[in-house]
Length: 198
Image (tube, rainbow, N blue to C red; front, side, top):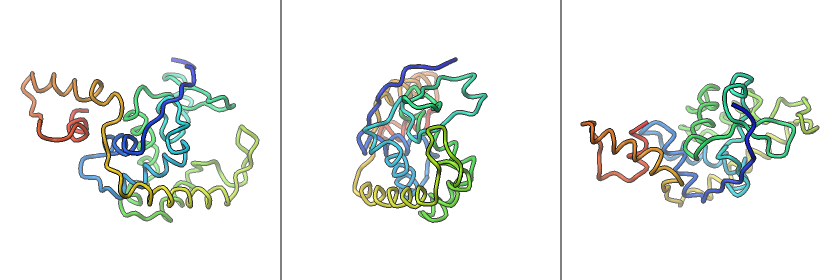
């Protein structure tokens, strides 16, 4: 695959929470959902400047860039292009999982979460200059932490809803499974159903 156009893909806070909730395992706490969604909000200016459903501005490994779609957001960097918001949330959560950060999110331990992001060079390694010419500093991580904390507070009273495309991409295949004899719980909200079918 290859480079694709950079396309603006926006979400409401409720839809973003729904995407993160759907991408996490059933039973994940709302605390973890809020923390991860808050990080996504900081990355995407509250989902108003998100592109190609990349909820965490996740960059591809060389193998991912060679085998999947990517976009550049007008910057000298590559970012993974996802087909829908739940896939974008899964991509972000995949990075967090591979760096052992889900337990910190589950515990609501923002300091440990930020330390894990920094040790994984999520914003870049402190002291290094990124491809845009910005030298990453401790202040970048401190400001990032403050932004996440602010968004956690904003998301407390927001009820997650299904993001765009969840019905077509995740629920309709579930209907096909039900027709084939799989157990599908129909009284659950769409998000709960979507989480069970992939």
